[in-house]
Length: 46
Image (cartoon, rainbow, N blue to C red; front, side):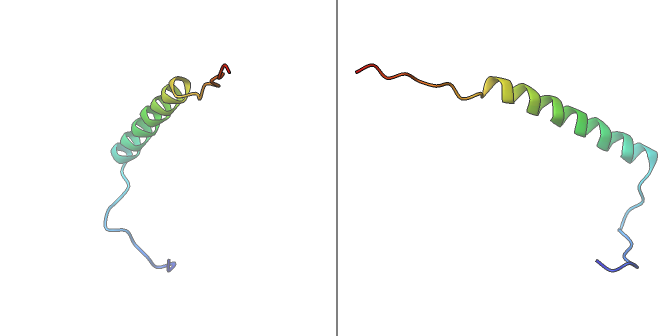
């Protein structure tokens, strides 16, 4: 990326707040699903 690159938008406090809220929700979702999707060892009886 060039140092003179300017994105086609302006980061406002409202945008930053939305990004923070989304990141928090994704973190919560990830933490929740990791607990429920923990692989279980299955024992096979011969």
